Image (tube, rainbow, N blue to C red; front, side, top):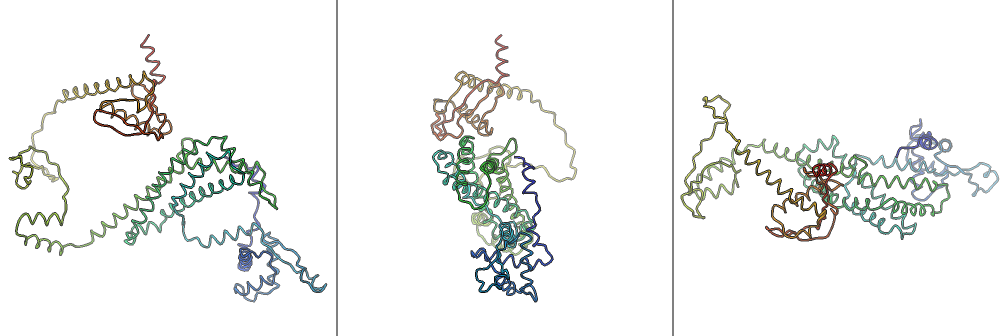
Length: 512
């Protein structure tokens, strides 16, 4: 939603005099006074006298030769900057003269509270921080299901509580995940990924990221399904209850109107929907987060492999190999040498060499060491130019191509006969298939796989112009598919078959 500049101009684009004390000439004194007010505010002490402020600033020793008169001037300046509110304190005056001295008390303003809270948070920032809280996915899915199933029976207070839990969980998930992934991209993280100390907690970090990915993949479909099934009417009814619950709170100050609150709630709902489902052709933020997390895992694994290879390449194994050679020379039989080799080296990488089977016996227990060797000449891989060899004639593969062409046409004809039979029915469920051949089973599973990977449409078009569409991709109903090579338990999917407009027009022209 594009911001309305006419609405922003009055409040959001005004100057902020409350921030002047942060960069004023006597910033140390102002910051000390404001921090003392904020600490006392958190202790539920609101109205403070100049004497209390002066004693605190003197105890902190932030300014040499600080006087009560200077403190009162600083307090008055903060009042002018709208950081403090002042009132006359005449309650404890014992004489008329004391009353006329206009002893004052001071109170923090709301803007100043938020400024000090922000400054206190900024002082603790040492990096991006953040975390990957997998449990928040389950919380969001649970709250969306509650909105979908109970929106019509909720009281305004319950709806407000549900919305606060839902949106706080979403904001926490988004901000913490973004901060954590950003922390893995910093220069400090890059430096750590190349040190040997990184190997100590590499497994822990990888497991942490993998567990988050698994929770994301497990709950993403639930959240997406709930958001899709909550239509605009249910959403508006729920948000109306949320706004009503918010307006029912007794307030001493002027708050936003009902329309402003409702627009704010709708914007928040659109943020959740865009984050999990996406908008238009752009991918969702959930997809980008999953991709970034997988990239981080791959980068961590690559870094660990490089560190291990660097450690191995820098070590001399001369003594170990000499000891191993003496060990091999001391064994008495070839069988013992084979056993030692198996324990030391394990299985060697296999090499596939083409040749004839020259076995002299059919014994199953005959060792490969007892069989006659098969001699095969290997071509030298040297870059030096060898002897000139006679060129072979180009092979004629026309016969093989023709056979492959005929086999392909037969497979295509079989597939079309199956599609044509299903096209006459229009629709088919797996439970209604009956017994089918192994080729038909493979073809059916191939269609189901293409439908599942086709996105929200769950459909694709065959080369013959037949659209195959899956109606219930998330069904929980199970059934058995009977084929000539066995039985397969699977979801009871329903597939619809129909000609596309171009194929139907072509059929009509051929019929004429």
